[in-house]
Length: 212
Ligand code: AMP
Image (tube, rainbow, N blue to C red):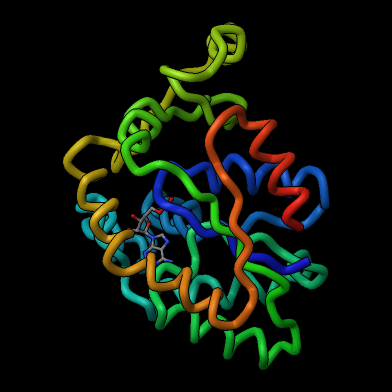
């Protein structure tokens, strides 16, 4: 199964992709995660991307496509993948189509996680990652037991550098202007499926499974 997860920042793409990855045994491929790793490792790409990401803008298509095509060539992606955070522009969507055509492995579907824009600020400002387990948590919405589980394991709740209010506003603007057109790109090709992404993580996952 080769799918793209679409949705605004904070719509739950990463959370749902991780559940799908565990369920189906196909890798989550997050360009955001790969870029953050490149920044942390201080690679040439990372150094270029750092400032752009901190400002909430999009990293150049060339850099992201380069990183993605290398990742898709790895053996674990041969049986399928879940793209999370790519494509973010119509140009990236067209480049992806070309790349997958070359590999003879077209996309099965693009799933839109549809959320109310007004709820996103809280979802994003409350977002944390456990430093020990890597689990995604939210200080407003996660059950206290899940937060305690991290703290009791000696973990810290880490906030992403771009999850501050000013950067979030810019990321949401970028989403509306540059990424929303990607929804129509897949609708026009009959690949789009929409999942209502409000409510509990498990309820959303169930709807996602049905959509697939
Ligand atoms: P994410 O973790 O998906 O929210 O991505 C974090 C940041 O990485 C974004 O705000 C962009 O600066 C950059 N980024 C991730 N994926 C892409 C992409 N497909 N194209 C351009 N920039 C990206």
